[in-house]
Amino acid sequence: MQADLPHAEEAVNQRLEPIVLRAMDRFRALLPREVELALELSHENPWLLTHADRLEQALLSACIVAWQSLVGLATQIVVEMSEVLLDDVVLDPDADKLQGGLPPRRYARLVITNSSRTATGPFHQLLPAPVQTDDRPASARRMPLVEVRRIIERHHGMINISPEPGRGTAFDIYLPAAVPLEAATSEEADSGSPYVLYVDDYEPMRVLVSETLPQAGFRVSCHESARQALATLQADPYGCDVLVTDYRLQTHTGVDLLKQVKLLRADLPVIIISGYMDSVLEARAYEEGAALVISKADDLSALCVALHKLLGHTPRPALVSYSDWARL
Image 1 (tube, one colour):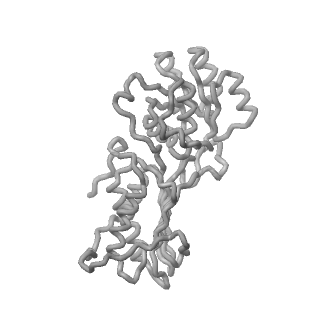
Image 2 (tube, one colour):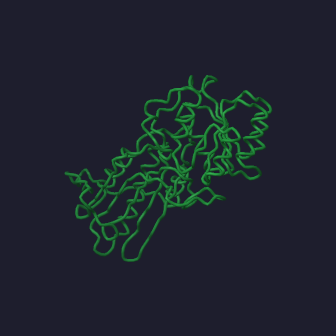
Image 3 (cartoon, one colour):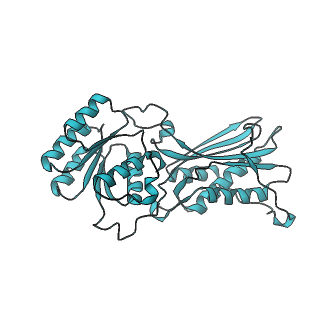
């Protein structure tokens, strides 16, 4: 049995493009000369929190399946990488999630298909076949598709596999983009780092925040209910530097929590985020003392920059070049 993808603490924050290019070089070496490999890479070159070897093998395996399912007039395998922001759909206020259960944020998207299904254009590059016949491996071991899916899901991503009779198999892969920053050092992760208390009853958003904020230089603890957050604050009212809460919680609203927090510690900054916040609710949040109201349609970098500004810290240079939340 193959080992699972290592836990998040063993993953590395790195660019996706070199991983894709290594997988494509290995795949091109497998293809017959008469089958072309057309590649289009976006200029964004997103970062991922990933274990490169496992992801590279998963992408290679998907390409092999696309090749083995070639039928009809297709003469090319087509691979495209882009970066997309999944915020074009109005959020269900009771779900705070988009297609496939993915939370709103920026994703690297990889489409693996063939020329019968996707027309190539001027931005596609044809990867040359190996010059020497000896450079071509006789075969390559392919992961089972269930293992490929498991690796993508362990990245908190999604994969759609679309076999179509007469046209072959296509893959549509979404991988959450990571903040393009070096991980915080152990010194930065000590008690000197700003401490954020985050409240959200939607688990994927808690996972996203717990992975992202430490990369931006914060310590963070995540809670799924207002009750848990209040218990933490009651135990140590001055133990955190700022509280960030979703507006819609299971038993409270973010404004309800804000009012109770202010009774415990009036000077604690509170930021409210929501996928559904109209002007009336936003005005009420500010009236009750919210330091800031942020939409979930924005990117997490907006929250990170706001936290640094609110707490009087200077954002890391690589962070301030990002104006939207979803690049994280």
